[in-house]
Image (cartoon, rainbow, N blue to C red; front, side, top):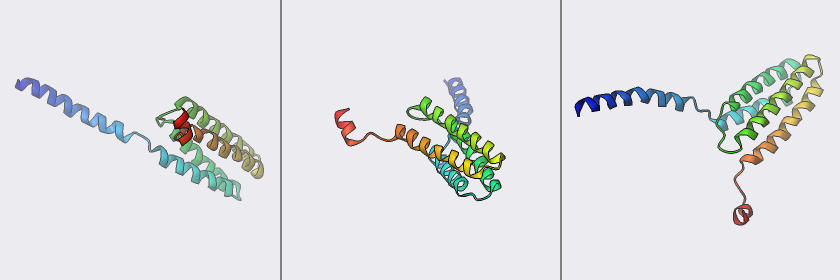
Length: 133
């Protein structure tokens, strides 16, 4: 009996650090999304290309971080939405590199529309939807 306890005890001691690492690698999606919103606002308010460029770099990093998150529902669609956001950021960065600050700002407006569209996937069902399915 004692050898079994030693084996299982060692197994438990070995797996605990693995479990805690997995938990620490989970992404706080809500916090990431808030930071994305902040970076987006900074980019939209920017009056200088360097400031917008820095905000876009930060926004891109946040979006890539969000792509590593586990979505509870509509995961594939959410990933597609984040890919579309990255595409819009790349377009804005190209426009910015050509000195087109206002064109980049217009391109970034698409991100807000994407945000609204894809957030609808994660909203809880309304009263009538619950009632009538």
